[in-house]
Length: 266
Image 1 (cartoon, one colour):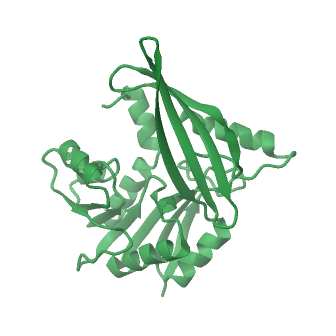
Image 2 (cartoon, one colour):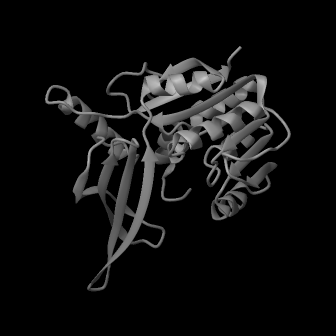
């Protein structure tokens, strides 16, 4: 069960969207396509319901791990770019989980993804995904937003104010699979014109008297609620449900997520 205990795993199931997406899969009855499926965090629980599942990802190393994790489950794993694939079939549910929508950095990337979703979605099917809600702080609301961020950090999600911070800040500490105590630091640069947050994370641990550092980089596109609604509309979708968190609360200024469920627009 990775580094999670039973309680942590149940919390992860409920607080990172797995329960939400499995419920949608039960509602639609499958078949299900997960784009940017990664290591199968969502696809595998859906397949355990007895539904037909296809997991698609551009990273072969992720798919290899997904295959090992899925055991004998009848999941089809496909290596492909979410912007340019053609499976020649349609699905009752298509999802993009884990905030993977933010990995599509440009308008062209987003529209290419939505074009592929539209082509593969059954006329009565559902398309669902989440993206982090862009967070801005003012003197009046920053304290409330800081509380939101603190809750998010406890779940190790990358919710953060859209601002540049060159100085490294402690994000989380954890024990890795080798038993090492690791501290993760973050610095960030926000490109306002492109709406892209460039993150650099530093994982540091000690081996004897020596400090070791592993550096990673990630870029995330932030799409604002009305912008997202227009993007979906002009690419052939209608939002039928929208939430601000996995408790299905309404979207507000301090919501960590924008969670949408769509149909093809008539």
